[in-house]
Image (tube, rainbow, N blue to C red):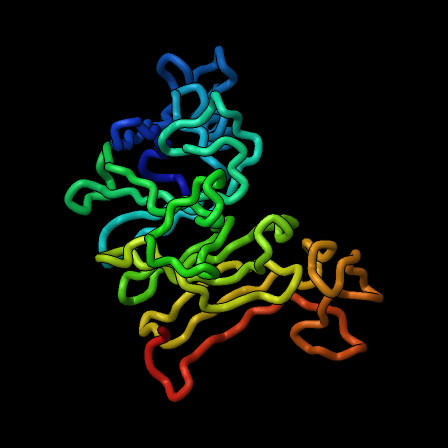
Amino acid sequence: MRLLSDGTLSVAKFHDDGRLEWLPLVHGGQWLNSKFGFDTQADVVIDARLASDLVGATPMDRPEDVQPNPVNGRVYVMLTNNTKRKADQTDPANPRADNVFGHIIEMTPPDGDHAADEYRWDVLVRCGDPSIAEVGALWNPATSQDGWFASPDNAAVDAEGRLWVATDQGKSWGETGRADGLYRVDLEGDRRGTPRMFFRVPIGAEMCGPCFTPDGETLFVAVQHPGADGTLDYEGFERESTFEDPATRWPDFDPDMPPRPSVVVITKAGGGRIA
């Protein structure tokens, strides 16, 4: 209940030169005052997006998750997509108009100081099919033909500092021809920016909330709404999924049971760290 009771809430401004500036959202000053509908600091916190626009923050492409990495000290932002961004609204931090596939930004605090007023930032990957030039994807050249993904949604960092990305394409499966799932993305060395699929969700579901135990030997993932999204484009089904005629009956596979969202526990055969 004391969230946001202490400290200073700030919002990011991504500069073209790779500098990230944190702008404090504090009541008063030129913008965050009664003239613009902010009578108290509570108003600023409740309408933080409106306050952010006024102070000049960078509008981002639907940030769904922000994940700090305790191993390398950097912070990763999942930008799922933004089909409403126009060509004249692009910027280095959001480089694609009609951003169907999303991207991931890496933020680096100076000397590991996450309370610093300025960071550096870079685009880790731009998602989508790298074989189609007009998509504008950015991956490591080592990415396999079927290794790329779209719509990064949630993320986790394992004990070795690797990034794990869960995807949510919604009803856009037909635009990629692949399911949602969980992907590992390397962050260091020659394989930086190389994804690899680890877990695939059933048709119509999205992957959500990956979480490792501290020892890295157990991974929890949430499978949301199986049988719901994109079934019209699913080869072999190609119709609306209904309660009477669902696209899948995962996880029970019982003709008397509908598909159900579930939490899956993943461990390595024989024990030990995953992947």
